[in-house]
Length: 143
Image (tube, rainbow, N blue to C red; front, side, top):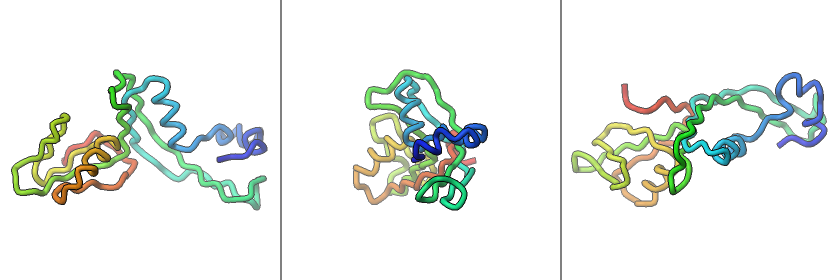
């Protein structure tokens, strides 16, 4: 997080840096505004604010993200935030159905939101792999 001196710096404002937010705060602002689906499609390094050149005690790493915010109805259990996670079922059956709208075909990655990833992980199954967030969500599918 930036200190007030950095936030009020005209030079940083001109560089569109003084208003930067951590990703979690930005996503929360979007979902608080009623966007039920958030897709983080890209995440890239942008700038460094370092103590040698800026009034800060620590290094501040700033990233640029590309987001698609979809104003669809808010799910009862909260927004769907896609950060590039995928689930892969590798059990003995042809598929796994979580009975919540997600059918995992054997050995076929399925793009899932972070909420679904947490729900699947809570099942403690040894035949479902959940990938880490890549922050490159492309709608899913394998090809």
